[in-house]
Image 1 (cartoon, rainbow, N blue to C red):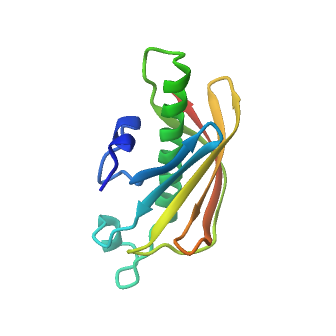
Image 2: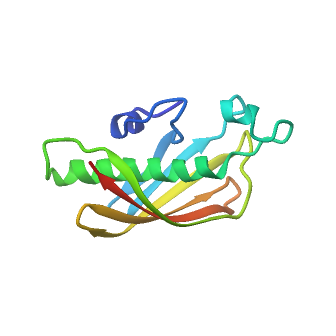
Length: 144
């Protein structure tokens, strides 16, 4: 079940929504959660018989979580009456350390690093339900 707060923050919708709920959110960053469901369409073709969540979709969950963070920051600053859409501008580095499978519950952590003009440079990581780091990524989003 997707939390309304997530739906209100970013334009993504199922089946391309990879954030279920926000655990914590402040100016220092955001932690969100996603339960990996067995019936996800991508598992039909991504290693049938040995389903593994694609790394690109793990990255997408981080980027979407960052979008929720930026929507909150935009709302808090009230700099603009117009809502802006977060768009991925850069992926600096991504490292995958553990596999993610159906039934896993992951926590998605995003922290801002710096803002240059309209580019928000951030870092993210995902941890599995045993606390192990699944992946890390540095990236930039812009608001359009």
